[in-house]
Amino acid sequence: MKVLLIAFPPPGYKRGDPYLLPIGLMYISAALKKSGHLVECINFHHSNRPVDEVLRNLSMRKEFDFVGVGGMSYQYTMLKEAISKIRAVFPRARILVGGNIVTCMPEKVMPGLNADFGIVGEGDISTVELLECLEKKRDPRQVRGICIRDANSDEVVVTPPREGVDLDELPFPDYEGFEFGTYLDMVTPTTNPSYESFLEAPRPALLTASRSCPFLCSFCYHPPGQKYRQRSVESCFRELDFLIEKFGINHVSLNDEVLFTANNRDRINAFCAGFKARNLTFSCQTMVHAVDREILKTMHDAGCLQISYGVENVSETILKSMRKPITRAQIENALSLTYDCGIDIQANIIVGDPAETWDSFMENVIWWLQNRKYCIALIPLGVYPNSQVYLKAKEIGIIRDEIAFISSLAEHQSDLNVTSMSSSELRRIKRIADELQTTYAHYPGILESVEKCPGKDEYGRVFYSLSAYCTHCGEKNRYEKLYFFPTAEEKPLDYMYFISCRHCRRRYRIPNPAIVLSPGWNKRMYLTHYPTKPRRSIPSRIYAELKRFTKRIRKRNIVGKRSR
Image 1 (tube, helix red, strand yellow):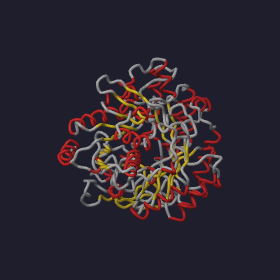
Image 2 (image 1 turned 90 degrees about the horizontal axis):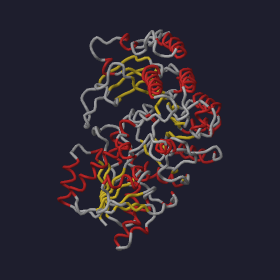
Image 3 (image 1 turned 60 degrees about the horizontal axis):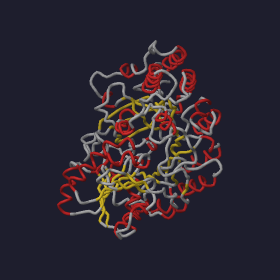
Image 4 (image 1 turned 135 degrees about the vertical axis):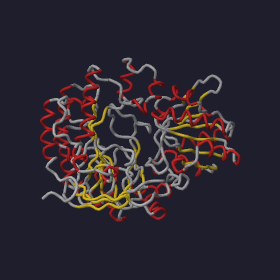
């Protein structure tokens, strides 16, 4: 069959902006090509032409039996519009949609999306079997892991789920089809936080070494199913060797919810040996109770730049509510060891869990203020379809219209109150968390110089070069041709950008480069980001901690020579 697979960018995307590789579609394309289907791919992230125009021109030259798209639950509105455009241009093609948006609630979304078939769960095998079934004119309801919409009645039939696939048996993602080389050419040192400015010229690969997760956190949902499966280390490095030879990659972002567990240390040791032998840097995700000093030192020596930990909270009550099998002591131990070993940390503190109270919020905020060096983000709870939090919200009537809910997810995913607090109380703690996160999150680095690079690149991007001293180790860093997203020209005076030290591998913040170069700018304008007196609306316990913090900050010579 002739198949067209399309990766659509989000609303407001501009060519050259950072984006996540459509790894799911890349796996589907590889599986279809391996089965002998004729597959064409369009990655609209690389196109500066309107979607309608590209599709219309393509329809004049080619016809397709199937058109495939996919997306997350918050992309419902975008996909609905995209499918409408596809229908208008390719009226005879059947439309297949996959991703979390279908897996989480197929009966609800399929009529609105107006797609013919949907993939529920992993699509590598289900898609191939569906096309084979239709090609041979058999009943598609015998295919596991799909849903079928009746065009006349809008009735949706969901077939039994498919068991988790063996990851070692899957072909590598279709890198060429989705223009991976172009993606790499677009990457800059500030494209992704996992290697943000660590590398002068990053060429990162996104590697899937496992699917699903061994844990069942209340706020999370696993589209690949509940069975956690790991791909063999040998299979992973066969793919990486191909990417090194074909595309010259030098960094690996491991796309796993959990790369290794506490009872599987041999796995991370094998990965570290492979990365070190190939001179690749890497970043990954794991749990705080899976690491110790020995493992972290091995990871650091092998080139680990960043570990993303599933922290989410330090209140024992909230951790229990979230169904997280960790303790505050384990969190503090892992963060301290990781920091000492010179590996950057990514983690979140979630505000607004169903068990949240004023006391639990204060416990987290005071801990956060005293541990700012770890660069942990304060974020509101996101309520995602089919998570335990979502199902509970639906059960008690907080969510009544599911389609209306997912239609507004992109803008309002954190607006629900699933706590026992009043709406005004919850808004207050979210407002405090937002102010702390945007204003007091991290110490600023000492910015010595900023220069705007001449001209723009082929994507219209403006670059800056700068020198800055790291907050953590005090060493000087020189950065050439950094692209700041959102663009520095678009952001206000008080916007702060993360940047990463190439000596100690930790992040710090710098002011908006466009503002620094503007007429009349001086360091006092920068210091207004850290008020001498925090707003009195902030609770007294937080206020006292912030006064100590701002007093230290204002003693620093932020721009110019380093303070002695």
